[in-house]
Image (cartoon, rainbow, N blue to C red):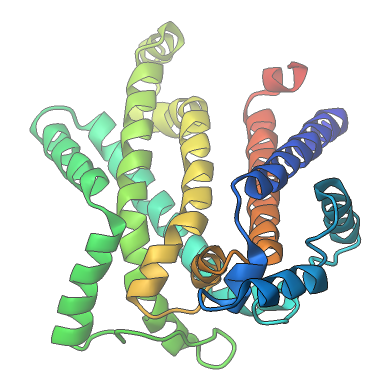
Length: 313
């Protein structure tokens, strides 16, 4: 198992290096001008030229990249061109908001996705078709539209939840739960539908295998077969979908954060893109890539635990 994990970890590090290097040069080649972005549209060419020298943008692209990479490896993500704040500090201050939304959304999606997917698979007929319609409906709803509907009805209309703002978990757990409930629901609805649909199809496929029919012929109850054999073999595709939903929740939280006035990484990404703030953009990319690598590694470990044959690949 150790060699399997090490192999996957090295593969993830190599992938992260390739993606970050490619994205750095791609951003440079798109013609974005961080000096212009930090000074605004009304800055004179002389002011922009002076700013480029101050930011070190007059150096070669390779020199700039090596400077960023060598500092990033030491944990220094640089300084924001727009606010002169530390990128790491800026992200650390906003990270709890986005992490709360992502973990909450994935937790809700995993619970209801597994529940609905399993029910749809074991109760064929009218109930399955009804859940299929509900799942397709949930998948088709854009999360920003759901967020607006929830904010207008449950927050502004009924006042059951706060319409805007975030309360930290440490200062007020009840307030924290109230502040993230509606954003979590808005993000999770599409994920619930995806996970439920994937798990339903996997359970039906596994249930049709010969060894499952053999277990039934030996007199094992359907519940025992489902819990000890079917779900175990049907879980890998659902785990993959769950990992993708976690990554999507991190990136998709940007618009939902805007709707509910939450100051998370999504708002940082939108502001950094608008101002061409290269250090912040690269810091967010690094965070996203590392998250993808870690999540994929955890999924691979889960695969290896569920099916020892996976460790041979």
